[in-house]
Length: 494
Ligand SMILES: [Cu+2]
Image (tube, rainbow, N blue to C red; front, side):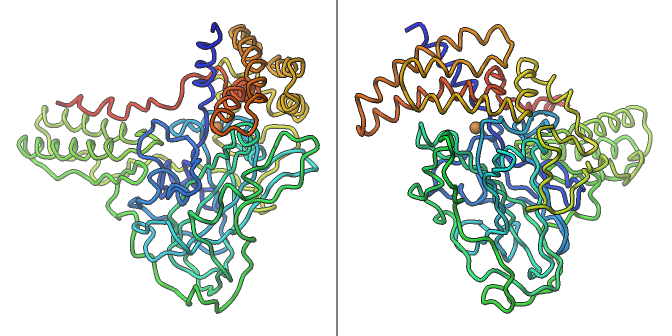
């Protein structure tokens, strides 16, 4: 029984997943959470969608609700999706290496991206990629090496209008042992300015385009050698003109635009200049307006956080100082407070525009990349993070699940070889617990072959033992992304 507590700790440590958090258009950041449908509640925001029949399959958790902003782009431009394990901290690792699987990008043409419910027919797949034999990497792993980013070029022949653009990661690591594919889905609201008139020759319904009976959702990513992999969903889009779905549109963007008088944004919130004043009474009115807007900023902040609300808060504090000194204002009236947009250098389109980087090394292109801070932000995982960027160490890690499949006690012991890459002393007890657990549970699983829930539950616990090993980049990161303190400063003015 001694290992029970340790097992719980392992489960807690293995919750590090990912969520699509920001888009870039031709390398220019649109702001964290801007034009992005993402979970409102930071707790569990990075969790995968596991119910394939759920409406969350369309645009993720809370994804049936639109956000206020739609980002404009032109046909032929590149859109980049940034996945983050900590939605409010892009400096950290985007996803644990053990999340092996394919990627895809889907589009749906909609009347108004700010209000469309996303579910149902109309989706088509623009691009996908699975396993790359030459590099021995899955698409998700290339994405991890590319700072969590996937890019696609939007064909300039595509009909103009509002779209929901939906990146999809399918992590396969929990299928063989837990019967559970993990989908990481987000949606960007985009207006495509284009005189093109093309569209897909067919579309699919989401949810509904995939089910547990699809081979991808039953794929064993630990097989040696790997079997051929077929991704879920329809064939990739081929341009078709005069199709039945898209009539020629040249409509200008009419909803979701950033208001002209916006002087600061946070995700999809917009701050507007406070009223003019020339005496103290007027100043306190402006003060009230300022704090009311701040409340809205914090209240609307999604899982990507409230970083820019703090800028607004400083504005309110500075303005209060004006009221006390009896001046007129507001100071710096109408001046933009928007921080400079992030920019990344995006590679030329290559299999969807992904930057494969030089093989085996972490791709650090872009002004915001800083591998030192990525690692030091989670000190106990430093060794593992570094190790994970080497193909050799990946192969070594790949041994663990394969030997687990053979399910003898001796082979289970081999599972414990993998975590040697982690130097943290505290890892030791977890390893021995995992070993005990694996031995016990594998036997049970055999006894209950074909016996429904019991088998699954047993196998699930066994997975924790080595998922933890396999995902060693996350095992000691118990600080799940569940603390955004979005209301931390909210009532300081009261
Ligand atoms: Cu995960």
